[in-house]
Every structure is written in C-alpha cells, then in structure tokens.
Length: 525
Image (tube, rainbow, N blue to C red):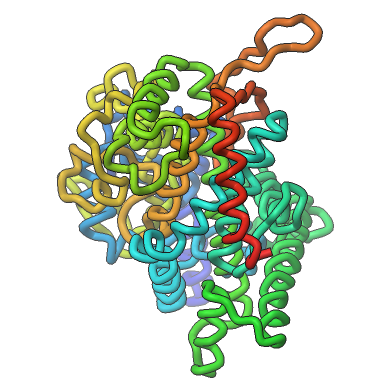
C-alpha cells in the first residue's frame, strides 16, 4: 500500500472517530442527561422555558451538571459556591464569550455582550465604569433621574392608560441624557421609541428557536443567504442598528460643531478621540457602545418596573404595607427622593424581590472558559460554554422559602444595594444573581438600582395600583404572573392595570414637582 493511500485511510479513520465522539460527554465532566450520538442533548433542550429546565435538571443531576450539543460542552452552575469559586475568583479564564455567529451578524461582531475578554472589551468596560459609577450616579445622574421620575408620575396622572409607554419613555430618556446629552420629552419621540424597536427585532432574531444551531454545526454558516431567512433577518436588524446608532452619534457631532458641548458619555469619548488619534475604539465600536448604554439602560429597567406593577396588583398587601411606611416618613407634600433610601428599607426589599422573582435575564449570558479546569474533581474542558443559571439560583428551595411567591420580607436586613452583595465573599448572603457575576457583571448595576428604587418609591407614594376593569363586563381583568416574553430581556406580556392618585394632595404635589423638574430637563430637549 502506497504512502498516500495510508495517509488517506488514516485521515478517514480519524474523521470517522471524531464524528463518532460528537455528542458524547467527556470522561470526568459533571453528570448530566443521557446523550445520543452526534446530537448529544440537543433534542432535550427546549425552544422555550430553557431556564426552568435548567432548574429541573439541577434537581436530578446536581447543582453543577453538563450538557453536550454536537461537539460543544456546556456546564451549568446552579450552585452559589461554584459561581463564586469559578466565575468570580477565576474570572481571568471564565470571562470570554462562546461563539455567537448570529449575534455577530446582528452587531457587526462589535458588542460587549459577545466581545471576547480583550483590549477592546476592557476599554468599553472602562468607559462604562467611568460614566456609570456610584459616584457619578449620586453626584451627577441623580438630578436627572429625580427629574425624569417626577415626569413619570405626571404621565401616570394625566394618561394612566398608557402607563407602559410612560415607563419606556422615562427609562430611555434617562439613558439618553447620560449617553448623548439629549432626552425624550414625549412617548412618541424617536429617543423614546428607537431603542425598543431595535430590541424587539433583536429579540425576534435571537429568541428561542429563531435560528438553527449554527455555532454547533458550523457548516450552516456557509448556507447561501438567499436560502436562509434567519441570515436575511440578522442582516436587516444589523442595518437598522447601524443606521440608528450612527445617526444618533452624528446628531452629537452636529451639536458639537455648533459649539454645544455637553457633559455626557458621547462627548467624553469624542473628546478622547480628538486628543488621541490612535484611540483603541474605532467609529463602529464607539457608536455601538453608546447604543448599548441605551439598550441596557432602557429595556431591562422597563421590564423590571413592569414586573413591579404586576406584583403590586397580584400582591396588594405589599403595596399597602409600603404605602403605610411611606406615609409615616414622607407625607403627601413631597415625593420620596434618594435621600430617603435608608429610612425606607422596604422599598429596597421590593426592588430585590422583583429582580429575584422574575429576573430579566433568566438563563444568564454565557461565559466561555479559556483552558481546562477542574472543580471538586470534575473536568471543565477548555472552550466549554458556562452558564450561571440565574432562574435556578434565584429560586433555590433551600435558600428561599416559598420561592415562587413574591415576598419582599425575605430581604429584611438586606439594607445595601445589589453591588454590595455581588462583590462580597459571602456567597450564601448574596441577594440574587440577576445582574450576573464575575467581570461580566452588568455594568449598569448602579444606575439600574437607583432607577428602580426611585421609580418604585414614587409610584407607591403617589398611586393606588389595582386591577383594570373590563368596560363591557365590569369584571376585573386578570393578570397572569407567568405570562412573560422570553428573549434578551424577559418581560411581562401586555397587561392592564388601574392607576389612581392616592389623594388630591398627592396629585397637586405631582404637578408642582413636575414644574420644578421641567426647568432641569428643558436644557436636554
């Protein structure tokens, strides 16, 4: 037999062997559901409700278990200690992102959600940390958040039927002022609507079952675009994102060209570019980074405030208890402010319980490990996808009594904001995992905590929240607490509530405080 024939036979044998190993769980890996050849556990992973399946499997295979999909290894962490030991303490090797072909098409491969842990990602995180630090939030952004929260109350007072649009406008406007120095004064302003249009399309393009398993079966990348509707959709969303965020950044440039510079993130970065021609972030990275601030600042906070409204209607006892505490400390002549944080601990508990009960990221964003690792005798192979199973951790039966119930009292004694607990070595005392873990923890955590506390405190101070009434039947319209849209930001499906001012005095205060806030916000119109 000639040498070329021997080489060919050896190559074919090796290929057959490799294919026969696809779908198999490597020896030494954490246990998990039985696999089938080639596909592994692919057919067992549901298109919807994967976050609940993660929790279910943890009860069968342990709080650290594994899945395989083709040649991809997946490690699922439903254990607090493991999250601390691996994602937090070993973040140098657990901070990459797994391959995301469709995510790359959507963003041009330029987004912190999918960026690897490299110099560009670190510069983006540095900018986020600079502009969204606790110091910036309390000394600078606090004024904007306070004024916009007062505008939210006016919207609820004058147009309660469109409560969700007012929440969206508020969250988008705060993020836009901080990022671009420009606010969204009305619910139909482009700065109030464009981010939600993008996120809706992004969710449809990245939602469960939206795409074939292209990152597992990589030959699908080469499928012709005209035969791949999922590719066509990704390119369309990418074009819309690029047009939106480039246009918004160009608005800033036009403003600056007219001599109008503002104390915002976009101006700060453009100043850096002018001083440093070799700045590591290019034009596309800058426009996407600024757009990400709006995406993260608006969509996720809107989802959590929506969950708050669902919870208040479903658990009116909580609303009544909170309002009694607010009445005792505040009265009706002013609304609560951030200075009241320490005197209203139950509001902080309500924020935490909403984030635990219905986390906006139930599956958690995947990490990727850079090298082989072992944990408690189990192998975690290089390039494995590692999930911090947020829903499972937030609903641990042995950590949270009646974990499916909305019960803020479970956070009695938790007087600090979430970042104090996420950064603590006391993993048993962590409040929840909705913001993630390790170096990939949500960079907007400080702004989000303050946004939610302010909005919730003011809404509870000013309004009675109850079930809406069907105008035809006169019956209360029920709300399904489990009816949520899955996607990048999990949020309640459309629902209705009734918002009524708690008294004429509260209504008068809302109008008066809005007049005071308007002078602050007018300069950002």
